[in-house]
Length: 146
Image (cartoon, rainbow, N blue to C red; front, side):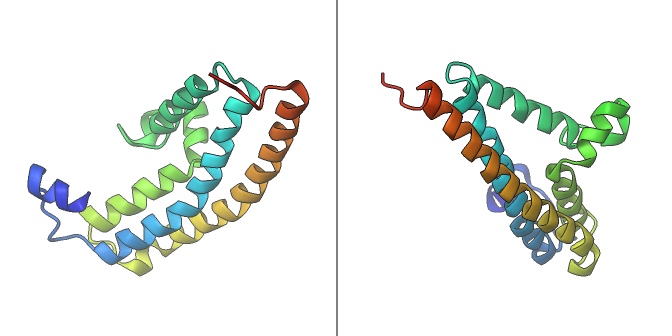
């Protein structure tokens, strides 16, 4: 993606710390796995509407994570949601590394927080997925044909 951005958009990454950005991206993978498992529960709970709910949640995460504009301009309830979203810290740290030459030491707090979020999210998500799977088996909605 970085190569495409460089070629197509003529992005200047001369001030970027690619090692720090890669470290943030690697650390962000951990909580994003947990979030993916949580979102995968939705089709188990509502087979007909689970995919649409997943898309709506993606939009909500984009809204509260600072993708389009700073989190600080959001209403307070959405700012609170942004404060617990791993994407907020991922975007902030990667922007710092790529645009403001933040070195690895400067993004270590964000990396630590992302790993901690993942360490909490993954076990909780697996437990909730197990509950949702048992519910779907009990209701007969797990196996779908067509």
